[in-house]
Image (cartoon, rainbow, N blue to C red; front, top):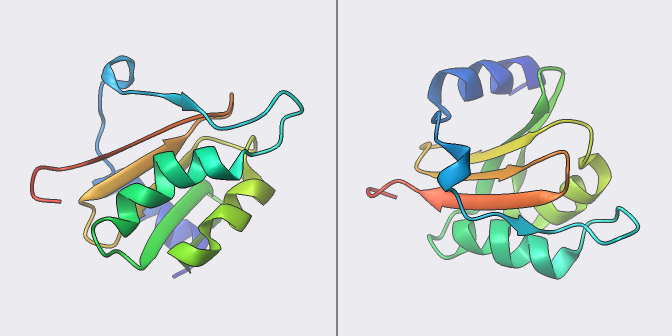
Length: 112
């Protein structure tokens, strides 16, 4: 799946939520680098705890990929700050956001 297809899927299926109601955690340190332990606990754990092994990741409409959970932290480290990163499983039941300011959140639908 190419980046534009991922973008189209995210626009269609990623939920529009009230972001002020989400629990956000700072996952970037004072130098602007991704804190891996923070990203693991906020983002990766939500997917792993549900047995999800592969996710769709969109940085912006021209940058996105399908990847294994094991590769997610490296990808986020490389691309955080380039756009609001949206992450979802293929079923679109578990979601995460990494904002350009370095805060992240994740949630699941009640079915997820």
